Length: 450
Ligand code: 5AD
Ligand code: SF4
Image (cartoon, rainbow, N blue to C red; front, side, top):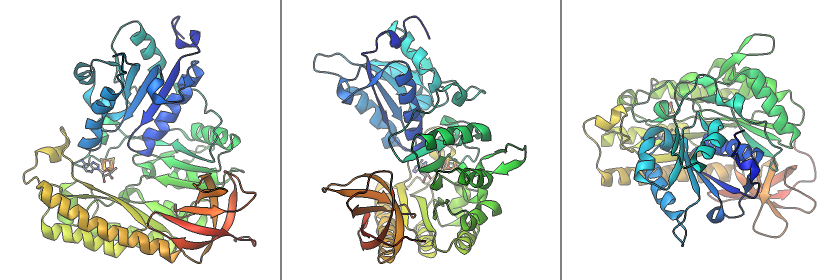
C-alpha cells in the first residue's frame, strides 16, 4: 500500500457502474471488493461519490459512445468532478485518447490490469493521468483480494477470459486479449468462498466459457464439463450455469453433462449470429448452420427440456434478403426460449469494418424488427408451455407487492410468487400459473418437486 493510499482517509466513497456483459458485472464486483479493502465505502448515491469507476463496454458503437455522455454527467453544479476512472473494454480500446477527449478522466485501466486500481488512483491523486492498459502474463486474479461474503444467493465466477476466435465483427479478441483459463484450484477455492458466504447458484463466465481447460487436483486434464462435475460435489451449491459458449467448443462431455449433472441447469446460451453459411463464413464463425443445428439436437437428446438462448446480428456486410431469411429459418428450426439480437455495428480495427456492401440503416431496422417479432413469439410460447408445471425456484429478490418474491426457474425465467415465510436465498417448490413475455407467476406447492 502506498503512503498516500486512500486507507488513510476512510471517509472516501466510491461507486462502480458496469455496462455490457456479465463478465463486466463480475469485474465490477471484484473492483468494488478491492476498493472496500482499501478503506473506501460504497456511496449511497453515485452522484455524490468521491471516486466513480465507469466499467465500460466496447462491443457496439452505441455502448462505447455512452461513456462520454456518462463522463459529462459526472460534472457537479459547482463544476467539480469526482475522481473518475474509466475501466473495461473502451479503456483498453481507446486508451489515452479517453483522457484527451474527456480531461476530467483521471484513470484509464484495461480489463486485465484493474487489480492495480488502488495504485493508479493514488497516482491520480498526486495529479498524474494514470493509464494502465497492460495485459500482463501473470493473471490479475492472483492479485485480487479474496471474495467478500455476498448478500445475494447467486454469483458470477469468471473461469475463462479472452477469445481466439476472431469473428470478423468483434472487438473482444483485441480488448480482452487471448484465451486464458483460470487454474482449477483457484476456481474451487473461489467457489467455496462464495458458497460459504451464502451463494447457492454460480454462473461460470467466460467469453468462450466452454473453451475452459485445466487440470484437476489429481493432475488430469479436464474441460468445462469436468469443472462442472467437480463443483456439483460442493455441498450447499444448488445450481450451476455457464455462459457464453461457442458452438465449436460444445464437447461430447459437456453435452453429456447436461443429461447427467442434476445441479447443471437446463439452459444453454449458444449464439449462432446468422443463419446463412455464406454470412457465417464471412463472419469467420468457423461453424455452419448444419453443425450448429446438430449440436442443438444432441443437447436436446441429452436434456429434452433444455431452454436454448442465442445471439443474432442482422445487417452484417453483404447480408442479402435471402441471407436474412435464412436467419429466420434457423430461428424457426431451433425454437429459442430467449435471445438477444443486434444490428451490426461497425467496429474500427475489425476486418468487417472495411468490408464492401455495408448495409443500410433502414434495412437493418426492418430486419431487426422482423427477427425480434419472431423471437418474442418463441419466448412467449416457451413461457406459456411451462404454465401448469411444478418446478423449483431460487428466490433472488423482492417483488413489487407485499410479501412477493422473485425467483428464477431452472430455465432462467423470472417467476413471481407470494408465500408467507419465504426469504431471499430459499429454494421453493411452486406451480407456474401464468406467463407473460418477460416473467411468470406461480403459486407455492405443498408437496416437494422431485
Ligand atoms: N455488432 C453487433 N453485434 C455484435 N456483437 C458482437 N460484436 C458486434 C458488432 N460489431 C454481438 C454478438 C455477440 C454479442 C455479445 O454481441 O451477437 O454474441
Ligand atoms: Fe467475439 Fe466471436 Fe470471440 Fe464471441 S467468439 S467473443 S463473437 S470473436
